Length: 227
Ligand code: ADP
Ligand code: MG
Image (cartoon, rainbow, N blue to C red; front, side):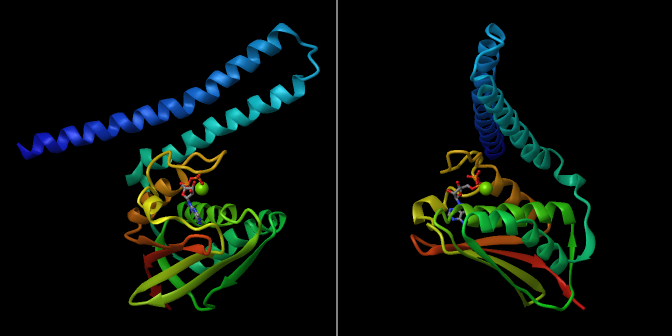
């Protein structure tokens, strides 16, 4: 019957996810084991520092994966509180100013001065804005402009994050939000999946516009009240 098929679909999805997690965690573990074994054989190796740094990087990698998944583990534990979203956005933008400057990216903030109240979990929304803005910065290896813009329409606040980066092909747009889908050497492909989940739990939605070699805009819509 339909229900059984549905269940099998879900089990297949869980299996795929589990395989992905196992794979992503096994790689850094294998590398950590290798370097640790090597270091334990010769405590005076001149590359000691270099290897320890690799091990620390790999620990960080595993930790990031686990942290992203913790958001998914308790989707119901999300606590919504009415908050003005503008200072939340400003806060994230200022957190990334240094990172942007290092990469020759000009950050622009074009947002309303009025109060826009959103039922939200502030820390989770911060995580979302951070993910999108970081992705935008990372999409501009030669620098560029990143604009964060807010606007109000029909009881929704729209937060747009626009970059002048590499863009995303039609074919790859479909893959956004799939766990472990990444095109980056040091990416983990979890940022968008987690961000989409968080927006969903705020009754919002995300839509993407992109043109290859021109840039990408992620638009986040959230139910809001203006004061
Ligand atoms: P990660 O950043 O670790 O790769 P994400 O889930 O944040 O994982 O993003 C997944 C993929 O989506 C990225 O590797 C990249 O290919 C694509 N992507 C996301 N944001 C952008 C953007 N602003 N411009 C171009 N590609 C993007
Ligand atoms: Mg990312």
